[in-house]
Length: 405
Image (cartoon, rainbow, N blue to C red; front, side, top):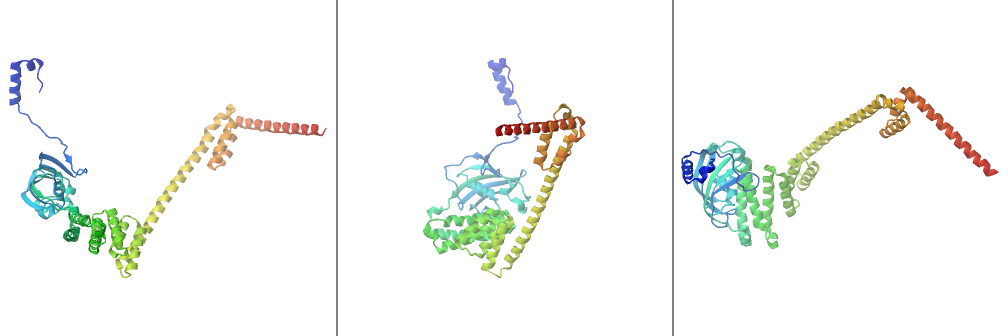
């Protein structure tokens, strides 16, 4: 609102202005806003309505009590108070984005969370709530209370092994339903990564057979999860670690071969499948994969051959155009300058280019044979060169005669 200067300075005018502001009906439209990007990938945006207390946050495995309301397209589809373990929200129809966001919240915090499809219900959607595939969600969440899970460094060896067994069992359960969607695969990988956190402690624990057994199973199952999540590089890394514990492990070799095959590393994949046959000659799947690797290698080589053949053909065509264009330029362009006595210079220049291009026919069929003045100049230059050579020879002969005298 614009106020005239006189109105702003006058007490009576100031009162009137205040009354106008109080009576004015303002319509505000929110065009956009910038919240906090929790993971710097645009998948979870947080806007805090009430700040929490303290500096402590729930961790993976913490027990939390929250109130939430879920919205999709402006329609509320969920409203409840719920108590659950962070990382297991999907067991209560809560998307993984809420689990992730809770690890950034403080006790008593009230916030609005904007979830992208990756952190929502993903491609599967949620038919129970009428949520379509790849829908964007909005949740209003209040963290009432939480009890943190014991950190790995706070546990002794026995507690770590017990916790690893519990987590591994949950991870295996999610792993078995990993085909149902990326959510189950993410939960499985999260649980199996927890096993690694619990067991990668002191060197004494690493030497424990029980610890190695858990680690081996975790690495192998985690590799399979990454395969299904199409994170092939991570799958190879997990297989490498599993094979570090058991170099002849059949599953580790086979799954690494699968990951490498999907990464188009056909020769490395074939080597892994061949090692599988060395460990177990009866493995028919590995034998079939070797055939696939050979077929893929052949197709890849043929495709490369076609690409390079086309590329070289284009290079040859381009070079031919350059040579032909140079020839035409010599015939129809440069011979015009021969009239002014530049024939000798042009002849040397064109001959040099022709030799460099490997095509002396350009010089032989150049403009000089087409221009009469140039031909005369060439003849005169040739005659002058012969006379000069004869004079030089006579001079040398005279010097030789004087020497004898």
